[in-house]
Length: 301
Image (cartoon, rainbow, N blue to C red; front, side, top):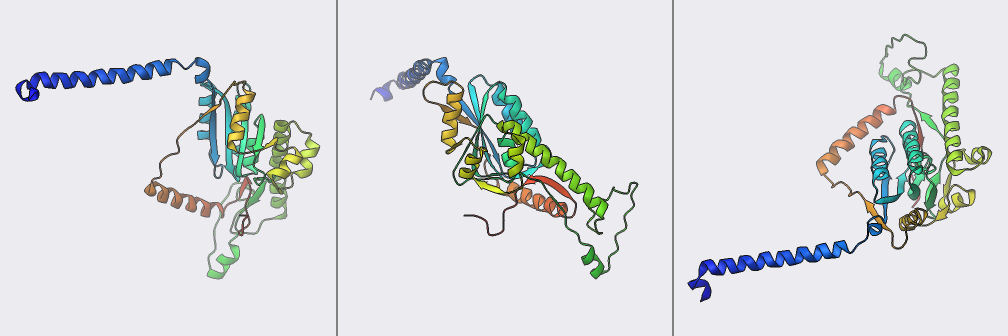
């Protein structure tokens, strides 16, 4: 009856009630939030994910720099789930982690696989945590290409190459490699292999002789890697986060912050997959070099 006789007053009453309730809720949130100390806001460990083949260092480097500058972040966990990849990006990430260590603690957490370049970047961290069954190691360099000369001979194609230097077409898929070229490429592979060995020895604080004795491309379980000194502790991601917090001097519960994973877009997935397959097909016809572990077809389950 009141709403019918005094519609404007009824509307004003309802509106005032809503406003009052909103102010009460905001007040509660402010009081609750203000109860948290500055230390609590600083109890954070950032997680940086490195997943899949390492082909580009940009995103990982940007994340490391961002968290390095963030005052609320006291330590960083590098979550590695990668078989490795290109030499350049792996070395760039390694250097950025070493820079970050000068300001904040960095702990590497090895997931399902952290081999070759995946272990290379992990070796730059202050500490490394792995699962007992993590596939890691594979300290070595792989180079290769697909030679299609015999196939071209069968179908009657004769490629023509014009070059200005005798080694310009080294690794050409349309002719046999010469002994001199093979020797040159082997020397190159040995050189970047030595860079790998040195990086691991420096990062882990181990003698070069010890790393060189196991740097023959073999893979290790996390358990074996710990025994060899390539890993510090056995544990999962949460164990790595808690340890990173302790190393950073965080007292009490350790909170982690992790950037949200990009939403799945099927069209983008199809496009990127097609491009990736095309690049891989081209790469197989030209020589490549990488810190990359290639699992057998049967795989490990």
